[in-house]
Image (cartoon, rainbow, N blue to C red; front, side, top):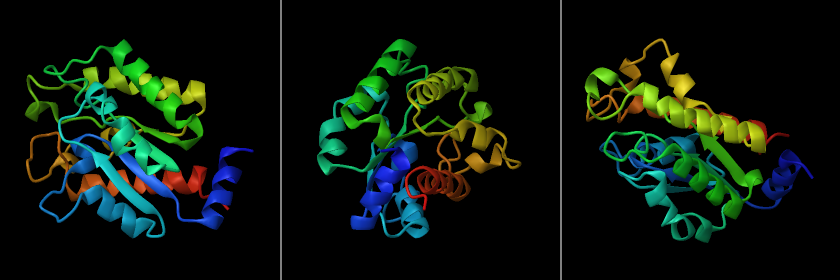
Length: 205
């Protein structure tokens, strides 16, 4: 049974539980009462059960420590993974091989058929001097793209979505305006990409 037929059967019998797993880009409230991403996803596909498992400041090694409690304990039907932003920073500097192996280990625990991988978006380098560069971010992006291709896991290339946007880097502006934490426009793009991927790969009729 393929991914689409599997999840069509699940969807016909119950609401799917989708966990969005990541760092502050997944979890940020932006002065709202709950994570902006979750609000927007609930508006786009309200019939799904959305659980936000983002934690500000996390890299993938930190996130692995809470993976069972924050993600697997919910028995999710689908999990989105967005890491690489903090991993690529000069102050975290997670080795590429460690990043790769940790992501593979988490996928093995979940099952590839339940995963959506997301590449980290670019930053406005003028506002991230000494913290992050897009060249470093792209190293982690490549790992994610390669894993998705080899293991046939859907990948949302958020890096490409942002960097080719006609309003880049303006789209990165949020309350902090730090070239990293985006606001309304960025979350509209992020949420729409997840909804599109779910509909194409898991909820297709």
